[in-house]
Each structure stands twice: as C-alpha cells, then as structure tokens.
Image (cartoon, rainbow, N blue to C red; front, side, top):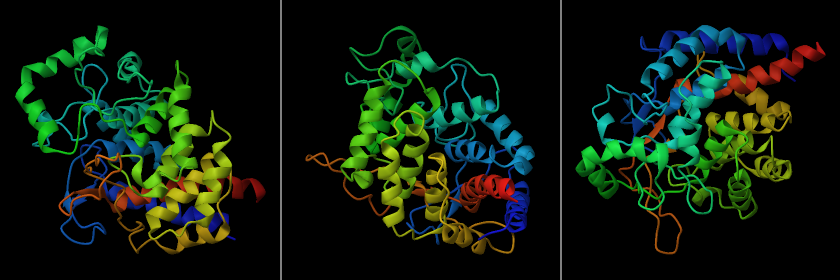
Length: 345
C-alpha cells in the first residue's frame, strides 16, 4: 500500500517536470506521430484539446496551481469571440482550415469553468448543434434545415470560406454530420443539466452495454480513454453505469502507463479507489525527470463503412500524446488517491 510520502514525492516530481516542459504560451506540449506506439516520428503539434484535458486534471493537484493557471490563460487566449475553440492553435498553419468543434470547445470550457474563469456563454450554441435525436454533432458547421438563430449567425461566417470547408470535409475523415460518442460524453460533462440530456446518456449506456467501445467514436479507439470520458460524464446522472465500467476495467489488461492512469481516474470518478497494485504501478513508472511515458490518447479519424462500423485507421493517420499528457492523468489519479490516504493517516 502506497504511503502519503511516496505519493507526495511522485506528485512533486511530476509537477516539476510539467513546469519545466510547459511552453512560454502556457500550452502543455503534445506530439503527433503516425506510429501507433509514438516511439518514432514524433513532432510537436500545437493543439488546444490536450492542454484543456491537462488543465482539468491538474485541478485535483494543488501543487500544480501555477502550471494550471498558465494553461488556463493559454486556453482563454485561444478562444474565439463566441466562446468556441478549434483543435489547433491560432499559430498552427492549418488553423484556418478547421471549423470549431464540440470536443475542444467542451473540454476547454469545462476547464475554465472549473476555475471560475469567465468566458462567453456558449451553451445555446452547443445545444443548437444537435441532430433530430438530440445527440451532439462533432463539428459546428452550417446545416440546412437544422441551423437557425445564433447558430446560423455564427456558422454563416464559415460560408465566406466555403471552398476551404468543402475540401476539409472531402479530404479528411471528418464529415459535417459526425456524431461521436466521446464528443457527446465531453459535451455532457461540460453542460451538465440541459433539456433532453437523457438522449446522450442513453447513447453512452448503449455503447457500454453493447461492448462498443472500439467502434463508438471516429477519433478514439482505446477503451480506457472511452471509460475515462464516459465515467466523468455519467457519474452524476447514471449510477447504473458504475458497475458496468468497473467490471470492464477490472477485467481489462492495460498495455501502457496511460491506460493505467485512465483506468484509475475512471474508477475515482465513481468514488471507487483503484487497486493498490494499480497505484503502485503508477508510482513505479515515472522516469528520472519525474514524467510518465508518452502514449497516444486519440488519432486523426477513420472512415465509417457502409455497415456502420468504423474501419481501422489508415497507417498514415496521426496520433496525439506526450509525456506531459500522461503525466497529468497520473497526477489526477495520484492526487485523488492521496486525498484519501491523508484522511487515513
């Protein structure tokens, strides 16, 4: 059983690593690579989504407050006038080719809201970005018959760059009517209570009950990531999911430190303590710099086949991850475990 002192030491070293690795802009670094194991061909790829996740995780770690504050300031600067975000930063060469999306917007909004940082009210925009079954579309784009009100006013501006938008949807795996389960989970996590949220919860529960984790989302195929995002979204409103998620995690075999951290965090969102062996494995895996190993969290998408099932990602599909990202999930897990250990001590 890990002691409070062991947890304190690992957390302190992890925070020191993040403080050293953090960019001057406040962004926490992420790499892109077509290598699924992210061992070769990794290049820095300035992006919003990873820093949004890391800022959220660091909210559980008081020692990381300065790192988190700089990350939150970065997110706030990257926001557009409507309180929306794209995947890449403003300085990225492909920034203008992307429409805003709900994954980045929901996670960045949740991180800012958790720190009581004010930003434009974007709830009505997100709530109007739903299909006829009340599930959220991934991309914030103009859609005939569905776009109206403020959503129309915001997305109509994209029509000035209609050719760019056309080729984005034509040349990538992204499609304007994408409905992805993790994106819906992250939007549910941010919005909390809203009309017809039960449709989103039902979608996520269907994935869990049908063992559909590997094929529920175009951008994620790691079940541990699915369980993490689903758990933080469903824990406040769908207690029936707890036993399902816990059973799946306890019977799964994590391959990477990132998997172990996501598993521990998912259980903690349900108020369950991870097994001591899982915590010990996290404590044993940081390197001499205090960081935990890089692994891919998400990828650049895949095609949906005619039968509705996703094909495997193309070999050239980029994946994103970094030591900083894994470290933040480890710090979330260890900080939450430590809170209970110190209660006992």
